[in-house]
Length: 433
Image (cartoon, rainbow, N blue to C red; front, top):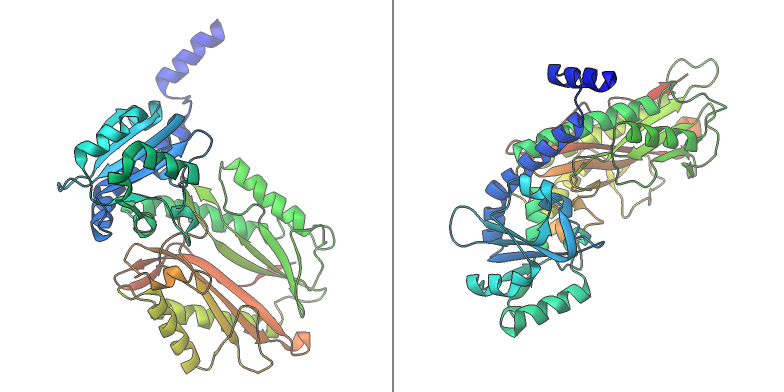
């Protein structure tokens, strides 16, 4: 009883706060949601000529946009519904989805039963109804086949004939950012690069003892400690040699002379990073990274600088890719024909993959990357987040002239001025003693 009384006093004095961090994160995510519904949703629905957007969820099978929409409790089937009725504000409803957190978030105008769906749609009579169906963007393909059939049965032929894919709408809604969202992403990036740089240091690695798997699990433990998620099942911690990647996140022991790469990212408040770091394990008697390996890194930095200086908003991702390669070739770099298809020439071979980033490590927005062909046709807009990713292959004397692949990747934001970094980017090859 004395303990309970003392605890009450401490709570009154503000010295104990249950759920403080959870409450802080919830408030931030609510701010993002309301800002995006107010500022982004009207413009993207009208650009894509969609009058009503229906996002269907089933218990245990949520749409990929479930976190963006505020989550909530779904009994059997539920719908988030957004209607453009011509006013400044998009009307928002949650049918069959509820719960304290969703209702307290303040983003929805109406909560009701999933049984209201037909009457709700009929009353508003939308001409084009967007559904999350997509062949090329997984994050925009949340509607199941059985869900699609059910919508057709409930709404009938009249409205089923008005169904269209919301693929581009999903891409635009998610990839255009509000200030509150960028602030959270910056916080995620700070945690991400700090953990990465600690991982590739003597704090974690002891040559001849530590394994690649040990480093990966240390990173996972840091994510657990800070309550972070990740787009990576396991951080990719790998050694690169003259013949390419030797091992990735395995029980291989890290030895002196190894070149170690790290590719991973963290998830915080529905925002996910994707970045790389590089380290070299000094041999006995060495005090610095060997000249050839350092030169290869510097070539990669030159490529990164050119990419940053070249990308501009108002152009499609494909136009930006063409401009980047033109600028690289002009100063003597070689454009690779395909990933990992380096040449025997003395030129540094380059391939870029500056993909969308944000709500996953690989986002759904415009992507200057060969592996996102559909989104190469999307126009870059200010506030899009991009992972500035490249691979530069340069000959190194220490490997008898074989090429070392230098992967550089850090996250940036597109502005009216071009591309700007969000946090301190990778400045060097870390030296592990």
